[in-house]
Image (cartoon, rainbow, N blue to C red; front, top):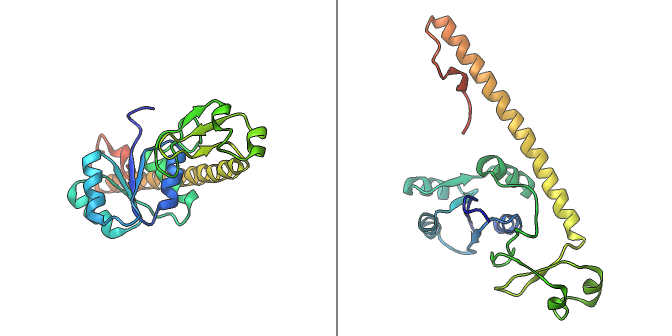
Length: 200
């Protein structure tokens, strides 16, 4: 797994999001009751991006120089879409890259016989591919829940596309408005004027 992939730490209200990020293969820490200063300290020490919907935590993180993403989304699809646009989170699930949703350890693809005594008999008969968490021992397979996972990620991609289009329209409108003002005021166009209104 590339070391360039972002690593996250999420606040105590975003446990579901932490599990999704781990499923997508992102190293994500989640502490159920950690105070805000502790989250900021860990983020700075480990080079992690803080993900939160808490304005107070966002302000504290910025004051301390930590990277932070303040989410506006109300549900998992919207939050994943935001993280796709703002942190480059890939909205496709690949079990070969996934981490354990429970403990964050990278999963290991294992021979079927290794999980015979760890899964229900009907699951063992029906599926061929299994992934094991070497830390907590949890076993995963692509069962019926993967359909729901794919549907959720598809919705997140659709939302991300709409947000990106809206951002582009706002940027174009702002650039046009800026150019119009420059012409009225009789000033020479700035060499970077075409970038006006864009969002980082």
